[in-house]
Every structure is written in C-alpha cells, then in structure tokens.
Length: 156
Image: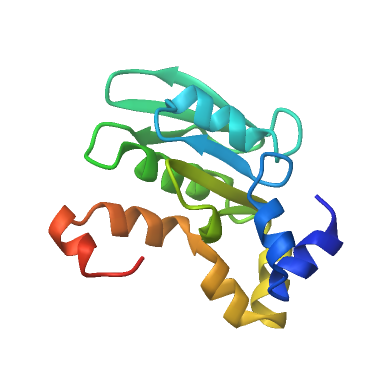
C-alpha cells in the first residue's frame, strides 16, 4: 500500500477512502469466511510465512506466528469471526496490529494490517481520523458480543 493513499485517507479525501478498503490495501473478510480464509487474507499483509493456521477442531484453531509459541483461538461462539480476529490480533502483537476500516462496512470486513509503528504514527499525527476511520479488534469483538437489541442502541 502506498503511503500517499493512507495520507489522503487520513486527510478525509473521499476518493481515497473509497479505494482504501479494497483488497489491494486491506484484508477483505467475507461474512461467510471460515478460519482458513480469514488467516490467509490477513497473512497476505504480513511477511511470508509469518502467520499460518495450525490444527483446527470444531471449537478452536492454532495460530502459528513465526518466532512465537502456537496461539490457541476459540472459534465456537456467537461472534465467531470477531473473536477469531481478536485472537489473530493478539497473536501478531506487538509487532503488528489489525483494525477494521470503518467506511467499508457491509457484509464483511476490510482490515488494515500494519506494523505497530504505523499505528503509533497514525494515532500521534491524526488521532481524530484514527478514531473515526478505524476500529480496533478488541472493540469490534466487544461490540458483536452484545445482544442484538443492545447493538441497536450503541456504537462500536
């Protein structure tokens, strides 16, 4: 992804915002995607072989991250995708972080995956854009763990 596109997004350029959520810049996750599809989509934005999927059972899967112990992610719950995204985020931290690109909200998610240094720079240089354009994995999972009625009256 080009830094100039990210800079234009943070400045509020509507054309850049419309382009940013596409698969060239973000991991695009369909609402029907399972663990393998989700891990592969996110891994495309990390160094080769950095994140892979290990053993998968009906209730959990192993996330394999280069240089770290296997990370067990629970996948049986009301918010399966959101909890898996939270687990992936925890597994790749502190080196990387993924956040939902909010303007691309629909039947799936556009996730911007970047080194922690990039997120620090975004938060430092433009905290308002960081808050309005991106939703952290913990906040995404917390929002979807609420009941339907509660979600209707709350913001992520």
